[in-house]
Image (cartoon, rainbow over all chains, first blue to last red; front, side, top):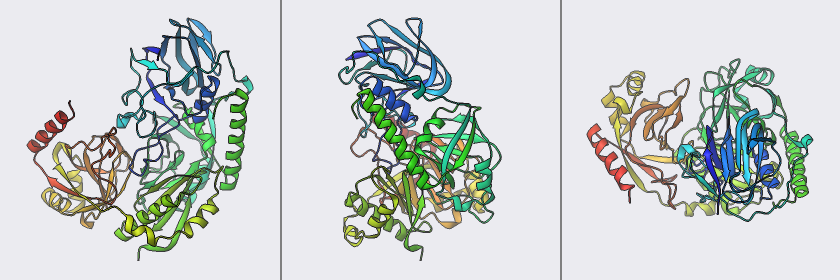
Length: 316
Length: 237
């Protein structure tokens, strides 16, 4: 069912779901929404299951015209946006009638907005996922970002009939100074003094950041003198922080499967959303947590998310 | 003996556990990796979401709500590895034409001077072996190949390139591989293949899989253009 027409795609808007699992052994990265928490909540607010395909818009959003009666919801970055020229807010299901125009002009706080439509976006599944992986030209709309004139099809039924909103105190705030909790490893043993520097210094997000990795600038993080310059290439998790020979950390994200530089630490899953929302020029600081602490935080985060989903009446 | 007596576990964040089975890029270690990965997959351990075998290590992605790392370690230590030996698929041999040096291999001169060889010698030595695919990763279908002659070992770039062209054939330390799609990369580029390597719509999306063998065949720039033309037209209906 034709649902939304793209009047303006924005600088970088792609179709994503929660990712493509099972093909990393062939080098096919997970892809998927970078800020998974915001993506899931966007879906829940329009009555979708967590993994329905939605839009991820970076820096600025698209301008979309409704072709049918539809509910949409924008989460993630706080965006300056209008519906038929009137300012509207995020984290709220918005009703659009044919001819209505939603324009996400720019992000005010954070970097990436998630735009869910009730029923989810209908694009073919490629290797089990609808996520766009632009470098591999696969998934989403023909493996590319949205373009002017694209028509987004709706996959499932519209499940909601009245506006739902997320209470303002539950909405995340995106700060310009970001604290990220990280577990040392897998190669923390390659770093001595470097660990001290990494866990005590501010690092600045550079513009050379994308869905593959977020490159940081700051004091170089040295390896132990006896540690090798590179390691035997091995798989990496999203959120792992690799240290190349120049000592400038790179936070690996969802478009990378393996790498050959030592990884000093791995950011915990609940904090990856903050990396996704970091803008060039923002400051990151890393806080050391143990694996046990990280698992307590993980369980607590998921329990809260489950409660939220149930309270919104969304399917799993 | 590069194979460890028992796997070494490394923590890869709150959802990843890395098993290291040995040190070095070695056919025995890599075979042990593929065997153990198969055994773990066959065991179907609830809470393990993905098993990613590489040169000498396996990344297990798990759901911390369903399984704890010490439980994974216990199950893995009790696996019967002998029975998965027979089921490793038989390897194939895949030939990859490569135009070495020039505009396709911007680091060829560096590799030659670093290794103290002539460009011709680098080409001859690099295209001689049958390389086994020890793993695929980094980008879709990037084959990491074992058996690079030690004399060609050259360190990575100090700062990775932002964009490496698709088809680039490259060296990093004692590894060699192919960039199937354009991507950033820190390896030294010595040549390029005109073959298309990735077909996401197909049931078998790549020309090769881990365990297969690759043979590089040196070609001229003219042959490169011919094959490229053929590759581009074969995609049309």
